[in-house]
Length: 363
Image (cartoon, helix red, strand yellow):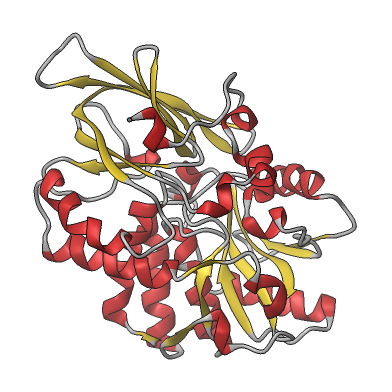
């Protein structure tokens, strides 16, 4: 499948829906992807099964606080600069690229890289949603090292990271991003197709395009829109989809701490003003609380959409007075193993409770 201009807007919208508030606002990266396809040619979207086991693959995306991306404008050149630097450093010829996460901006950046290099993009990603840290990717959980890695800042300067653990890399790349304005482009996880095959969350790019098409064609009331999306999720590894709450944003407070957008949002019911919902945020929406009762938590997906249009709302775009609907979706099974929950469960975000699947919380 050739990713043409008409696919990109749907991909941006659908990826924002899956991104649980994170992954970066897709608008500017969408413009970059549109220009890349116009300038270089359409990028090909392929299944991992189309590649031999020894094909060389890298993950390409942005690292930093999503709020920064609204001010520190991306460049069409950064992914290509990073990939060329990676090839020089490692001696590899990259055969294909893959996304870190099916997050807003980070679903589009690999397309910019692929179009410039004339190589395909793999249909899938390392999260099936968005999460804020490198050890939370399925690639890391499977034991693949993110280094050697190349990072490029807004001015085209590069930095190399290698010979360190995953957690050390997360700390160092975050420090580098903060020192370079808050956002950098990176090439990580040099791996072969055989390695990727075992840990890829498959078909998420094509799923996001299909979601975006529904959001565009059936734009309108959120409850009806969710009914239209249900059939798309039925054949996928994702679990149950439920509307958790509809109401108005009464307060939202986030700040950039250690390279992340951290804070919370409070929502009030339009039907019962005494009913208040709290949502914890670390780039992504992490938990939904109805008073002391937990309705959903990471790694299950928590998505905000505009109640009247059904359009997804990234956490950095959430603001006072918006009428929103919160949707909960069961995460892919990749994140329900003991090894995965050790790095993506609620305790990894500072919460004092273990993960309970959304279908049990809402039973």
